[in-house]
Image (cartoon, rainbow over the protein chains, first blue to last red):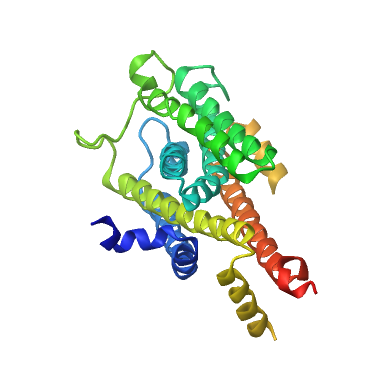
Length: 252
Length: 58
């Protein structure tokens, strides 16, 4: 039954490579369009906040980046688990490709949060539960990247780093619920799936657009990296050598 | 420009905080994109060079 699903066709690196090649330019275009729209609404349309003034506008990059840092970690752990359970080589490649982008989004969330903290809290950093657990997430990403790079045998490296990412996923609910479980300086969730948003519609619009922009960006960069990893690992396969002749021909 | 922003941050100027947050975000995303493309170019180059072509070694 599952063999008839076209989705599984793309589990083959050669098929995925072609799909990613076709989608990547459109994803970069989508990212730029959505990000520019978000910046336009966020800076020129959304009103100034009554209590924080203009400094609240950091929210349009800080919150989507923080969301992406968690979502990307979960997807990295998911593909690692698929790779371990089904011995699917593409799953490990995707997992490795996600890690640097996840680390960058975590760093953006931490740095923009710190910049926002100075004028609102009066300090760049506090060791509260939300900030500390997000910092641990950055260390988990860096640990994953370092572990994967330090083992020469690709298969062993895949397995070891996959285990680390699966164990580390426990940190994601801790980040998300930290503001509820502990008394933190960091504010609680502004957006909830079950309650009405606590912000103006233009603010919400700008934040949503930036979130979709970051999604498009993450897909685009992860596809770019996955394509590179596929070429590195499958360079002796017939289809990659055929691809090489095609590239050579277009260059001549 | 960066020195001006740092000076404004020291004066607690709210615009400077916002601009520096977006500058850092943009810079990090640009670096990440550059590194991804660099990796892809290196992989592509490898399949085009003789070392990536076992049958061409002879």
